[in-house]
Length: 162
Image (cartoon, rainbow, N blue to C red):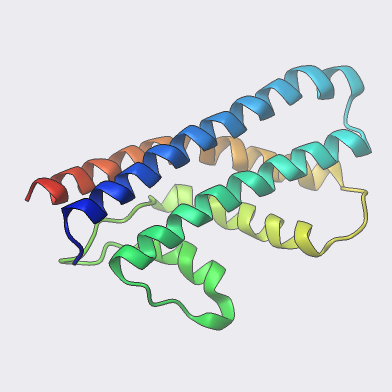
């Protein structure tokens, strides 16, 4: 187990991630209210939304990796992205509380799949029906992740105090 200053650094990472996630979501809200409302569901607005969702997941995944390195740092190399996400929903007795609840995890799995698809999909045309599905997962996960990060930070605060 790491010392108190390492816990403080991890708590700082959580705080920073929460702020970035909030900024990303506020930008999405702005794009939804302005560009999409004015331009509609176009190729251009699809690209903007796809990039927002990719950035959102990558930001969260970076924090998940930090948590994994702090507590267990044991990921399957061939599918570490999905392994990492799944481990964030695990309670590891005597080690740590889960960072994600099951509902948040299920929403993030869909976003992770989309991010993977986006990274290897080189066409600039997105199917808005499929994108709307991912947007719903993004919106649901945003609400849930705020609570999950707050709860995990409270766990770390207790750990730091002991």
